[in-house]
Length: 387
Ligand code: G3I
Image 1 (cartoon, helix red, strand yellow):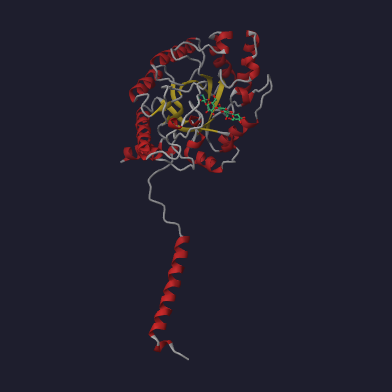
Image 2 (cartoon, helix red, strand yellow):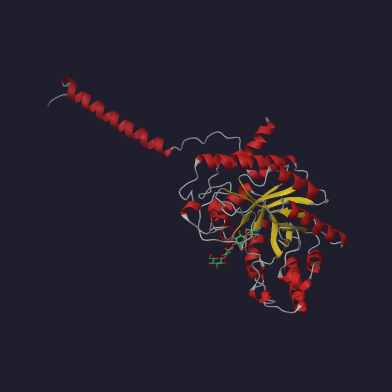
């Protein structure tokens, strides 16, 4: 038999084989061990801003029914308040006259109660996403009775479980006058006073808000202030004003935002950012706000980041979020809540407004629920301030 000892080349081969096996062993075992997570001082959004204001998000049915468990877990981790994006609007809550659908809303309330999340009802009175039967009502008496029944039935059902209600949504025109909705046309400005009064009667403990977009625009701001003063003069309870905050990378300016926060706080009520998002896409008509009836066909030019957001724009978005959160923190004695209108970019209504089927990136989490640079930049504010 040929012995290895006497054959250096066979010995070398054997060693080579053994090293190969050892290397393979190491590779398999190392692959099993995940690389350590990068050391981070970041805590969640809700923990970071716990001393400042509630931090929330608009949520949809998939999250609440836990079909989207990643999203549901993220809600529990990051936010301490939620607002249903659509499900509590009139067309879903009372699709036929006097017939209420509570199932979905009940699920939202259960989810928030179980997870100690402050629930914001959105909304009781809005001219949009109304049920068809309401639009067909011709008599003022019937409309008034239907409005009262709608507000009282829903507010009463959730007494003690709702942190606050967007009682009236978007009742103003851009020039600050009252929007000529079905309600104003048939019931006059009394519908505003009555809606707040009925909500208070049904749920005396819930906070009651007026909520609108473009609340930094001078004329609209004047109108909103007049509206709140009118409610206060009538002796009805109004606890806060919701600046929806559907904003762009540059508009409104920080100065306009600050002036508005101060002006609303002067009314002696809470100020909230209720639907915050920041569009990064071109807006050829300079549309601002959230007038949902303005919708247009798109073109490729109007959808420049369909594959991914360029780093330069991601950085711009992160800076914009950091700037506005610095301002919110500066005025956190006046601001009680900041709610994002959605959790991840893929869910945002801004993928379909003002042009349908675009790819927008307005939130803090990407389409796979990964935190974006904007998320980190917002958290940095609190880290910076503790150093
Ligand atoms: O319910 C139908 C569904 O049956 C259908 O299959 C689907 C197909 O498109 O449409 C569904 O309805 C959509 C609805 O959201 C629910 O997903 C509507 O088309 C769509 O227009 C509607 O958009 C919502 C919009 O309000 C309607 O006014 C957005 O998701 C929601 O983010 C947006 O939220 C508003 C706030 O309530 C008030 N402030 C402005 C804000 C942004 O517009």
